[in-house]
Length: 432
Ligand code: SAH
Ligand code: SF4
Image (tube, rainbow, N blue to C red; front, side, top):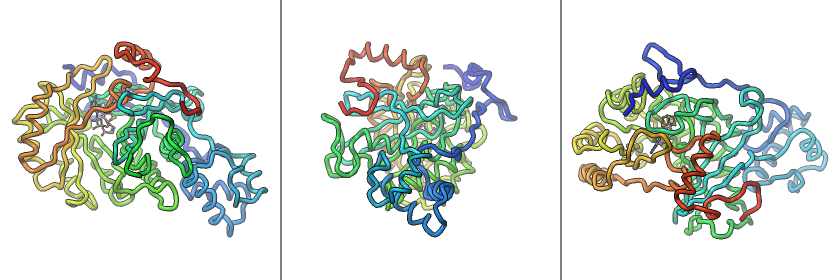
């Protein structure tokens, strides 16, 4: 197993050093999406009002007009201004001259045998920051009988370099804007037929209990959400607006590798559920697996969890623990995990390691995972083992990476798995 430091060194020249050693790569900066024109999909109410003001809509009308647009975009899923029956012709024409209701481009859609869907999305180009091509990110839909979970990305790539994570090997890193984060939900609703009056594509797996097809959001795609906390908080605000996209904040979970100083803001301003990528019970091992641990060690991390605003038995913190064979999966480590979490309202999620091309770890054997889970369970914690979903299309945790090099790997894996047309189907907007 390579150590974290050799791992980050391998990623030079983007790796940067601080007094604690190389933990992060430098992110690409990018101008915020306040340029004139562009799509109105995914904007906050405030940003919509600004766009209206820029078009010369008088101040006294801005709130009402923004409310109308908000309804069409976020409740009805409108994709063209023509559909907006209660908006005046003049305003519609003005809007259409400068703005669009475009979504990010769906470059590909893959459907796993278990119904998981993965979309490769291309954002509008931002200039030299993404080589005029538009950044690509991945977004995954995981259906179950009683819920549909959308796993969204918060960054293109990730500046952190956890040694077991595919995303961390991507070089180009930038924050996604609020609009780019929210648009992932809008695209999912488009593709799933999850707007009023629409139906899902033939053969699609969606919840059967009458839930919205996307009922839950997890920030477990690409990136470290708490390194993009302002946009993540605003995006959660848009996604949870009762008169809009309408998701419950209790069904929105932000997963972090442990950016302790941002916990308070997330709790107070987003009131979202928190998940911690713990993965190790000793600092020496966690330093290796999750290098950010050198900045915020386990003791500080757990204290920040105890202090998380709103934490209670009804709003537990999820601790994620990836099962790595011979690395972190002993009985002693299971017992230490239970000891460490004492007093914190917690759920423990055991994640079988998902391999990716070139990864240096193996997933723990099944009986080892069961034994680990039993120890945790006997100590009074629910300890579900997360069933890997969408492994055949590299859609499972930590497998996301949006670079062409991976497309080749994916194609190869799919061939090996014998997945043909049912595994991948075309891009564009026609429902297959
Ligand atoms: N950056 C955030 C959120 C994205 S990662 C974080 O680290 O929490 C989402 C989850 O997938 C994290 O718990 C992460 O540790 C886990 N993960 C990463 N790579 C994985 C892999 N190869 N197998 C299983 N889980 C993985
Ligand atoms: Fe980034 Fe999370 Fe992957 Fe670590 S596990 S490299 S924080 S995406």
